[in-house]
Image 1 (cartoon, helix red, strand yellow):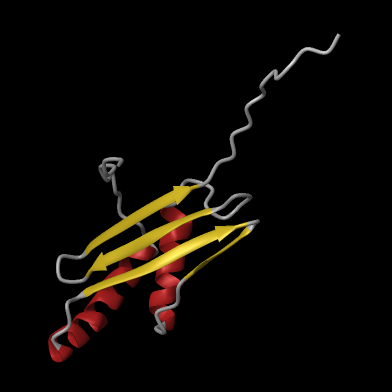
Image 2 (cartoon, rainbow, N blue to C red):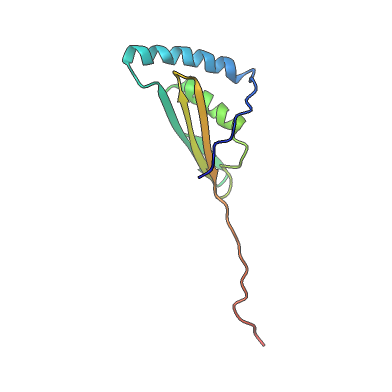
Length: 115
């Protein structure tokens, strides 16, 4: 198991205001409906395409798509693909992005010499 990478997060001029507005709206639902306050979605892909599981909340889905697009610095959608999840704890405002990608290993082996 790999250890989490320490965040060297710098403010993002586009995502931060969207995040703050969404959080404010979603926290109202958390308080009214007595929900847990944690949202988790999966993303995955392969063969030159990828997608993110929809939450049914279009602004939230668009935000998660931008988060993956901006912060995933590995190729999770091409060739063998990959994926991961995004977890947003609305109460603590912690956004965690996990991911993986597949690789193919080719190993050449000499089985027998032909005379």
